[in-house]
Length: 245
Image 1: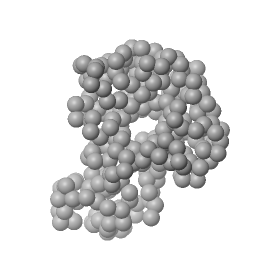
Image 2: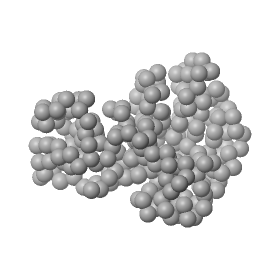
Image 3: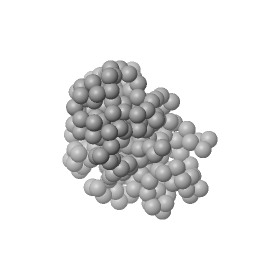
């Protein structure tokens, strides 16, 4: 059974050697999110190594920013400096990964501030906001209108109905490595599957929810649930046959 196209994060914990990138390619990872800046770190040296490794492997490279939102202006400045230095183009997606913190006040306002800075050089349609599943609640209003990535490793799905991408594991090949499913092709540019509009059933893939299936087939969610005698809270499991007609 095929799965959704995959993406992977590259951080200081991720090997930058060619062998690791070849292993990722074998697992159908063709799009990398390279961390260009981490809050509190003035120079994120591994960003250049990973950018070169991804491009050498023939992967698309997107620009990541991991922030605790302490200082949005400083984050934006450092991120932009590396973004320009490494030659990221306006075609690359920009990913803002918001870390949990109990010490920073007015975090929603600070995220909005950071987004305003980033929007000065990247179109809003190319911005992703990433949260741990248990940390999203306070930011739901701010995240509207952006691709939403949910960090929820080891679960059956993202656990959030409007997730566009789901980080499903934080380990790969005995290394710390974030891998995710790109449900709607935000990073990969395609949905990674072929839909037959003549089929009456859809076979669920890892990470699917009623929302992902309804979106894929452009079916009103209540109609899909009714068609399958299902409730919104019912789990969708890989291999499950779902009526779409």
